[in-house]
Length: 226
Ligand code: HEC
Image (cartoon, rainbow, N blue to C red; front, side, top):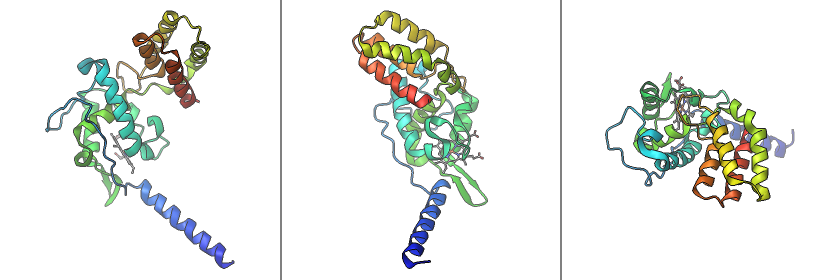
């Protein structure tokens, strides 16, 4: 073995050791900016205060947006991109979206999980705080069922192409999107799935000239589904 080759192998080994440490929770939680969300007090709640039926559409969407960012920075490396677990840690989409599931979620979020002295999941409670916790919870519980999303992706592609062509009948498109969105559920039992069909319908309802933006949102969802 030449010296440079041996050095290269040494460096690779060091990198894989670093990755293993990374996968086992030896990482610093990344702060989440939650200023835009309503305060929920100091004491830890046992039920998600940011559900759509509690706070309305706008705050709910904000919670999902902030939660997505918090999730991607702090949880995705173990629990999977888009909350679809790759097997390293449990799939969080299945935790029931009611008090029982919330309590379990918060127990893990606050304290993390240690097994035989090894941190399998870091504790996030004190570092990220309660608003970030519930924002991430809102994002996680509203992920659309990926199998159902795949089923509607041909229909969404047709609608996306109509919107891009710029000659779509916006009212008809909103109706189709709303119907498709209504057929997409969550795995947590949360009543509304934050699907791209739902998002695009909301965008066009608020502004019937926003065809490009709605098409972009559909495109992002379609590429995630594939
Ligand atoms: C370093 C890897 C790692 C990171 C990062 C991580 N987790 Fe975990 N998490 C785990 C493991 C491993 C378990 C399984 C522990 C057990 O057996 O209960 C787990 C379990 C959970 C559970 C219980 C799931 C269930 O079905 O029982 C919740 C809730 C949870 N994590 C939420 C989060 C959230 C929210 C974040 C980000 C803020 C996060 N985790 C970040 C590794 C991680």
